[in-house]
Length: 267
Length: 254
Image (cartoon, rainbow over the protein chains, first blue to last red):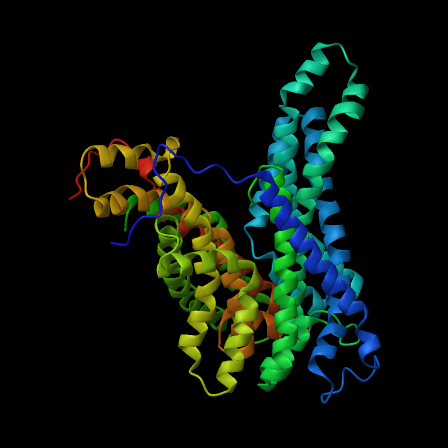
């Protein structure tokens, strides 16, 4: 049996410091920003109409395709994050107005839907509907349940916080509690829950485009280039978009994980 | 079959078996092809045969590697575990399916590559969950109580790891199998489509390409049911393995 690298019990391993989450988030954001800048500068490397030709430089073509993938993912992630956070807030408000049963049902539905292969809806929507805005909406819907579940957990934890009880006990009116305590403390956890949508929508769009049922060819997508190269058996055309897609997914996951680690919650 | 697994499978009837039955029934009623229901049933079997072995092997290997990464991080096995735990987001199932398709076009054999491509995301997910769980089981916190007690009773290190630490690392992996099942399902659909395998996923994608909702929706329903079935299987195995469910069982180890 190999030697154990465990530290002795008298020297317990300290828990992961919150700065590790910050470093992860920062490295993910830096990589994603670098990718976005490189993709934005892609037309300077080659004429925009030339990069789609089969004999074009594969790296330039992949960077050009990244413009479609990243901009669509950003749009769908904002939409999905907003839908998920709205879902969680609606559940919380209805829980206060109507009763806990409605809140529990709404969140149970989010949990149940998050366990379904919702990413399969994106190629289905791409094939049956075909419009980009509908595709963005469906892609956003695939991420919304997971965001809603996490955002609701953060909201519930905050509503049970002792400082809110103390503020109410000190006689602060509900409006003041909301303005001075609830909203400032809720912004970061909800933002962290919202970032969960970015890797999900990027993966869902790339999956649909890989099957030829995602973004239209005029917009370009890493998934579509990967799928085409895999079908043609062309490793030179395959490698750049596949690597860039992997890198973008890693960066998006690092941002989401880092933000959740900073909030003391693991994804 | 162990009782907790059977119990979970019975609980999953409304969410797993009914959608699959509804998908097949709907396919028989509305799909344009006369033998669509039988094709969907056969497709479900093919998809299950693609996913189940990959999930089982990937999860088992990933759990072992992730656990070993917590026990001996600087050993070769520990490095593999750390690599798998960190590489999860870089290796989505559909991208590995595309790599497998590329290799098949270059002359490689389809079946082993397909299973390997689907097992890697499961291994990454398992290693990612098993490593911290094993660390907690061997650590000085409250979750390390069983291991400390076993060591205090004089059991050798191999028995302590196998009977007390490993089950504590496996339980969260099986509980978090949902993400691995979803990744495997998406990867299987991509593989079926890229390699022309006769699974339920390719039926859905072909119908979507043809713009036929009557062909695509039943397959989607059936695949949703299959996902729920695999999730229930994972939870059943978790219930069976989790030491928290055996707390009253006296020790019968070596």
